[in-house]
Length: 397
Image (cartoon, rainbow, N blue to C red; front, side, top):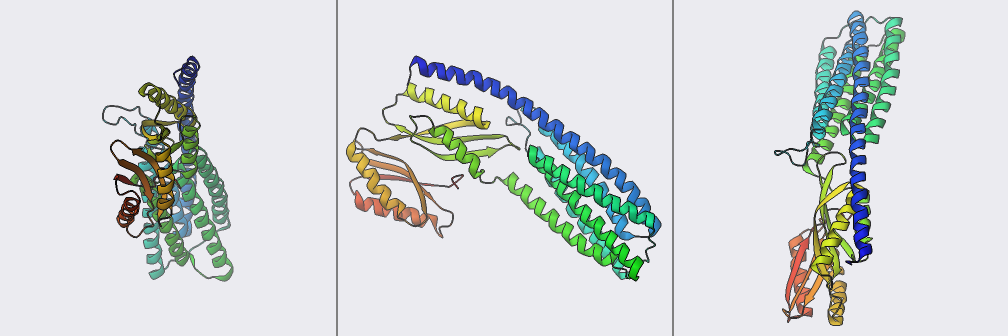
């Protein structure tokens, strides 16, 4: 540490980090343009379909086709909300919101989910009314052709919008795509009901509308649940967390990376913190350079800003302390519900032993497990003061 070569490496990483930052900004701008362009396509397609289906539904006295037209309008509204949400989410950070406005995309996805849920409840209500007071539909060949064309368009539109949503990591587009696919099922079911009526004179469209409405309601609830979960804060993606830890531990001075916490401020927008284990021989200057290098490397490779890097020192000069660590590790890791032990350090001068133990959420009583660890380790080394932190598994699995 502290050599000219290390300094050159840090400088190079800083320059590459600036370049990577510019590239990330370009990618974000391109992502927003893609979302908006896809949403505009969705609006045009849905307004066009809604107009045709509304006319056909009114002329044929078909409640199913009219509800199908209403669903198309709700899809158009969803796409409009996606555009507004994307524009607002792209605003630069300011004094009131220093982490930016990225989470607005989750809010827009939640509004779309509510629209889907409302459409399902409304269509269910109308279908029940038609079951109680049925109307005789009057289908024509032209009407069926229009409905069939609508099925094809919605299938293609749903797949396209959802695939783009997955590609650019947009929950709003994914939800809109899934909603479009559901509408295709609705239209197809309406077509089947019409054919049955024309060939067998059996009117099932009101009952079919009620069944489809239940499917829509279920989909809306699932979308809403998923979006709310993200707003509340979910466990970080395991693969992403693994890659970040691998980057951190790629530095030769780092023997372990733990307690990785990632805070989501919108799709692909993360800040975080991590603890690293380093030899107790490093100076403050060495640590400062190491921490800066890790911060740059993680930002470059993963577009995650580590706002804090904590340090665990590892005994390297005291053979007795190293043996104590292995003895204690064996006992700790044999305790049920303990997932990991890290941050171990012995201070012989103060007669203290400190380490963190990750206790799984599957433990019936995590505090009881924590107390059990205290008891076991204290029996092994009664002359030492223990400092055992009960840690939480934020992203390890």
